[in-house]
Length: 130
Picture 1 (tube, rainbow, N blue to C red):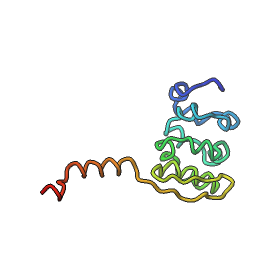
Picture 2 (picture 1 turned 90 degrees about the vertical axis):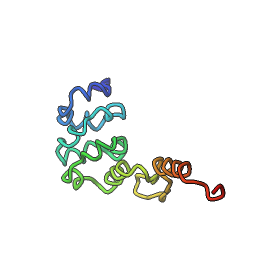
Picture 3 (picture 1 turned 120 degrees about the vertical axis):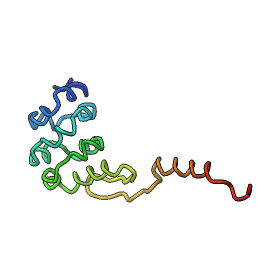
């Protein structure tokens, strides 16, 4: 199973939720990318909290993170919840030391905000030219 790539996980779909705990806890980024959101939501809450450590949760896509159920969320530790929150709020760049200390909050403009700002500048007439 260690040689399985993204395509294999996409192909097995929700069956990935039934993989043994040891196998799931050893998944790498390429394999996590292939786990479907439906499979994420099918993993029992107790198993979810045990097999996915914060680094693996931080590798989730937005869709995978959004598929986490309330029951799964309640079974997670504070550090795991922080990792999940970071995936669900990608516009915030919050470096976190996973030993429990926050390194602060670094805010930046989202790419959408920057693009809309540039478009407004192009579309609105310049007061000096009127």
